[in-house]
Image 1 (cartoon, rainbow, N blue to C red):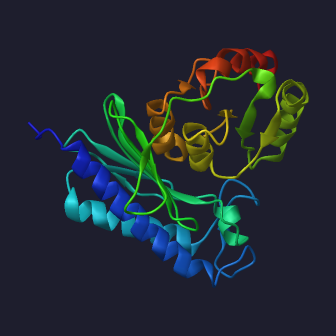
Image 2 (image 1 turned 90 degrees about the vertical axis):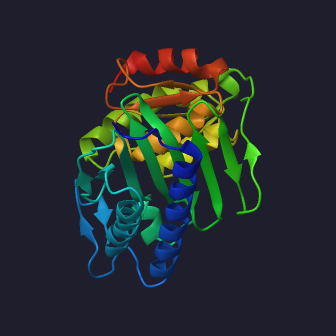
Length: 269
């Protein structure tokens, strides 16, 4: 029977690999752009993937294989390995590739490790600012703006829906974007304002640290939110995954979660 993992050790491993991957991405960003040779596309012409995405994932998976050879792997860029320990690492090596290729700051590295009950540990690192968010299930969420500091997140502020700042994301598929735009017609008059950052992991962390009140997206991949969803939940947010959002997520301060969910479901997309 596999040994019970030390969750602090798993968190430290995830933080170390996320920061190392971030350094690799920073070094490569100087020579990459949205029009660079070798930038390919995935789900649509607007969904790019670069050599930097793949290099970041390889760095992370090589590190996990060295330290945790029996654990499973699930990565956005194709990493896949079954688990013999009951643990699987869920990796987004570059969340916000469009932002990265345009030279913007709002992109991140996201690493989570899950057991049969969901995420045990989650880490999101923003290389351009040096900020790292992390959480261990049942032990709270933290934000560190330098390796030597850190503060516990939560409780989240109490507010009304009409005074809330809401983050969202949009699909790469044109027909889905049209549906999402229609939804905004109902939402925008009902809230303080909308933000679209381009990294689901960072949007979730913004709710966790109080720089936004809510985040929703109707179509999301597991590696986009595995780490961030744990972080925001441990900070005290309400997190909804199905049945109303079977392929998406809603994370919000408890005071606005129910009215926001009700509003969103009036025009399900």
